[in-house]
Length: 252
Length: 243
Image 1 (cartoon, rainbow over the protein chains, first blue to last red):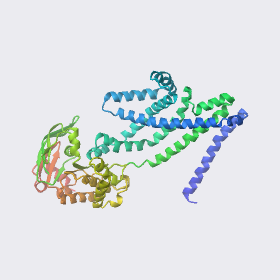
Image 2 (cartoon, chains in turn green, brown):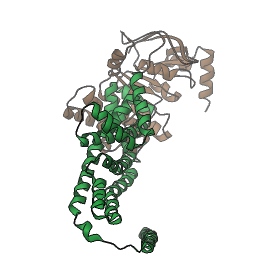
Image 3 (cartoon, one colour):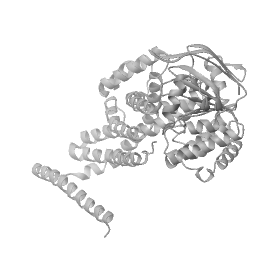
Image 4 (cartoon, rainbow over the protein chains, first blue to last red):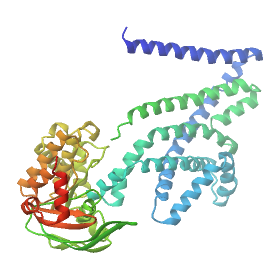
């Protein structure tokens, strides 16, 4: 047996042990509860769970696109030569990052959407989530932009790029590559944060689980599938992030 | 090449980089700037490359006075090939793309034509097998040669080198200096900032010695190295040529 194969076997063993330990803790806790499981009533609502899960995926993807655009706009505004634009972006980012998403959703839904006559709650939901996540993404992109060295800017100027071309061909490709792992992490958060949209009656995963609970009075059976459904989305993202991190260490 | 500088001044905050540089260079193909670190060589080169705007003074290159506005500097930079000490190349692009990108985006060549030009340049520096590699996969010497190929690909009126070998190992230094010497032999117009006196002596038609933001001596290379007039130049040469 060569050393790498051995270390893989050893690591797999340790992984299984850790998993078993955690499982034991939970098994013990549930056993103490002496809970009688009733999965049959829940199973009747499987289409409802699936529907909610798919809506959550759709909301997440739409918000990902929206938050990337808003994040990029905020990050570029903060570096703008127009001072007012920079301050506007800075204030927005601080306000969004400093307040709970729940409050933002309620304010957007009951105040801002009302004022601007936006009636589609899904549009409000995606917009709110995009702005919320965009504030975090703008900081990630800004850090990426700042990681591009002065010598690269010199090189871009020396070959005759305009400022816009320098951003397009030199700064952003390098900044985004730097920002990709934290961006993927932010996306995982976005998926979970979308659960708060249930408070404005958006029929996503969490709301559907809540409804199943209210029909069946089986909270554990209603919410455990919820946990698994979110894990099924966030786990691949976080594994993908690891893989990206291992790939992006190309730098000079 | 023809360079005319009149009372060029440049400060960075309290630090005076150039304090009234005036000189004329005519009928020279290669002009080498030497002097102690912090003496203003790089600043002068960056002004000649259109990368820096002087606080005062006038600069004319090949009879064309430089107007220091962003648009005219941008147009001017597109006629100049500049090679820096290091990190010239864009790390997210291959060697080939590093050359084709400015050709396509700045000089408006078609992708096919840009690739053709880039391949020819890489071939002339014996880099054709490295076309698909990123800078991280190239040695320091290869990186600088790709940078030189990129600078040359736009048919510049002037090639500027800012200490092109300072970040390199000795054997790679030789490989890069040989390329520059070749360009000199072809009759290209070069301006070089360097610490290698032997190299300066071999390639320079004209040499200027800068210290404390001033040109203390500017003369034909043979005069400069064999019979320096200025006391400070003599002291500098005596020091750097001792080993």
